[in-house]
Length: 156
Image (cartoon, rainbow, N blue to C red; front, top):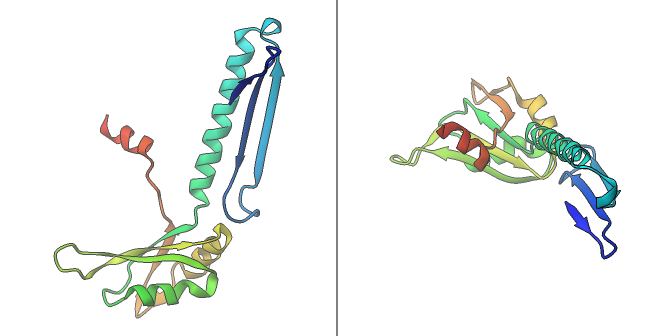
């Protein structure tokens, strides 16, 4: 963000913090102060590029360390309660959702589990990926969230 005070001194400030556990990405912040007469546009462009790179790195890392897991190859007889019960030993779950067929309303064999903490999600993924549940091998990975920016890229 760019701020200018009453004396004409401008400040560039950038700060980011991850939600959830402090063990995930933590927090970073930096600021520059300058007077418009003492600085040229090259410095401002360099600051803008640095901020952009840091923000993109932060959002990409946050996406990779997300608290939502994608669970595939589940039994077609698995219920929402079964899914929540399966992952509850690893931490507090905010949502356990099976994807249902729109016509038959029966589970499609995959779903999503969302944890309150990124660390709990990572522990659950490590422990449950490749396990046999109800006679079948399941796979667990971090859910890939799609942002509006990602949607625009696929339309080109």
